[in-house]
Length: 584
Image (tube, rainbow, N blue to C red; front, side, top):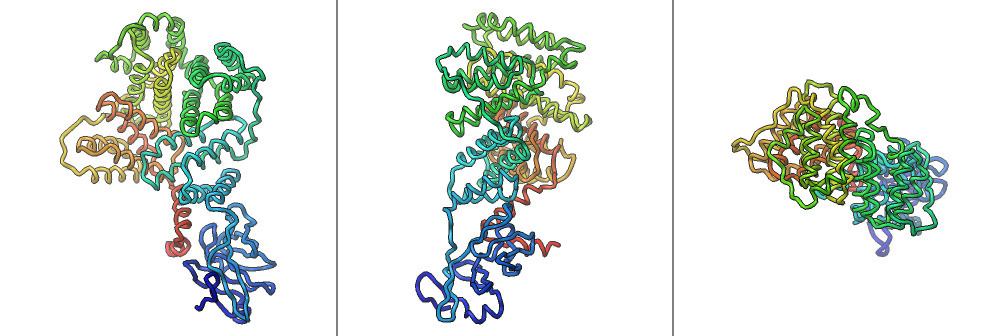
């Protein structure tokens, strides 16, 4: 086709286009659908922005172009969609000169790609549209937008548009942000898509959150603010707690605010099966990514999970047949004295201490922790040991138990991990209470290791680590291969495989599934415990625990992966509908 200048390309005669009504041309690498409608010539991208169906095969009536695949509708002149789930279709400038039709094969753009996809992400979150969220995540990454900026958008949305505040969606988003650097490039996009779609789902149909203002006075003593906050949480006064917390964020240093939150989260036993403390810790970890200047709204969203939480000392399992809550409360009453006694001492974990934590004697367990504190054990040391014991419960979970019991050991593990991560952030004696709660729950979970599944012991192997990972993938494609998954992780480590490769493969396996809240939590907690493990044995247990938990919950329908794949192919300009039709 001859060109008249550098911008426009001759594509048809006006008479021919008028007679045929439509035409498909390819110029500048673009497939362009031309329409003659109501004495006007229009040109749009031939690929429907929803799922790529050729729009030249659509219907035009009264200025509306309708795609025949999912009935997305577009205003033909500007390309704007009537249907938010479809996105706008790109249009091209057209000129008619001396009976010929010319098109400039560069689409009109109302906004730069980063701005366009940012707007689309907002729409996807507001309308809870998975495909729109997926395309926005891929589009923003392709536009060079930093992952932290995408995370920031999700956090702002999730804390604003859910009256009940921080919940599983934002926790998943925080967990995915934590593990994303350890994943392959495409899986980092999958991780952000996973977190954001769960945030959107959490907020769907929920009323927005209206903020309580901080006090006008900011010169209140930090200790008094902490006391006020805990008192308001104690009596379940969410409005009062929020006002105090916002005032503390404005008036206190970061560590002081974190201590206040951790104290409130441990004033009662094992709130909401550990979720409350995990929410607090994940919100604080999120601020490591997006910055403390977001602390006001982010932390305020935690208040409902603190004030409305179920308190385990009110449960029979914590009172009968042994008063476990009473045992913990006796130790917490003397924490200051115990910590003072051990202030100048250095504690080393005794050889039998781990076995004690996994024993069936709650009095001995609590006494052992009390003695350790008096001997100088720090909250971080004890939290690390309790988290390793909790990981062992998952790694040795007996598959003869009811499937729902996976959640029981999982809750203890993710709670213990959250307490451990908190102890690494701040040195706060109140965190001993979290350690004690975690240890008691490890005790309560003891029957779920009856009989205990074997943790594979180190052994010689000459197998190729990559082949072992391929076999591990296979365990996730069939139900019930839980023990085999754990065995293969041990074999991979024995073969000298790089743990980073194992983590990438586990991450990919997780993100291709329709993984739920607990499964997504489990991977992140396992990765963190691997990082913090004091020896190879604990590293091994952490990865075996993750692999067994994933294998127990896979495979799924993988609907989310299908959506992500469609989004990626659309943005790469690949065809979607042809292959779909061939598969049918």
